[in-house]
Amino acid sequence: MPDPELVVRRVSDVSYVAALGDVEVGWASLAVSDGVWEIYRTVTAPAYEGRGIASRLTRFVLDAADEAGVTVIPSCWYVDGLMARSSPRYDHLRAGHRPPVAGEGDSCRIAPAVLPRSTDAR
Image 1 (cartoon, helix red, strand yellow):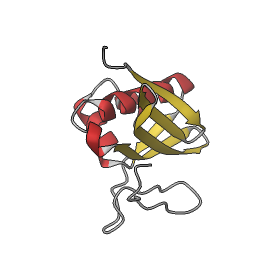
Image 2 (cartoon, helix red, strand yellow; image 1 turned 45 degrees about the vertical axis):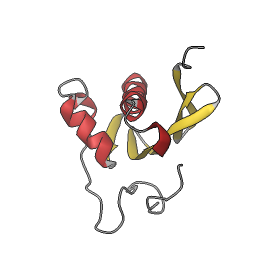
Image 3 (spheres, helix red, strand yellow; image 1 turned 180 degrees about the vertical axis):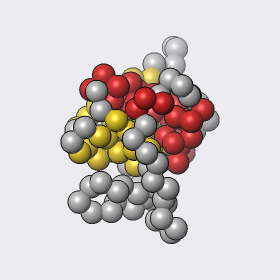
Image 4 (tube, helix red, strand yellow; image 1 turned 135 degrees about the vertical axis):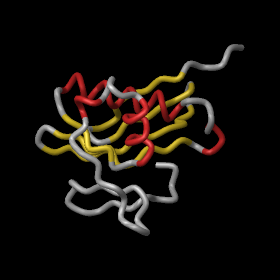
């Protein structure tokens, strides 16, 4: 039986999920403001790391942002790095970079409250 194909979908206004079959293996969290999405967290389940899941998930979210006509604040270190490595493909989306605050890890800057990185998979 072949491996299931990775499927990425938006599950809410602020969340995307990557799944292999019925197993959720990656998550992206964002804050939505007027004309800007801040992607502040991407997570791949530890058992699935190293398979390109985070890259495909992040590109899916960035492409969705492009289709929505919004700019992106890449507060997540992974998103920021992927955007830099993929230059110039995503350069027009970049609204700025806000490096994480010491001790907070990736965190959201435009949501009503700072949402620190969780030890949860989501």
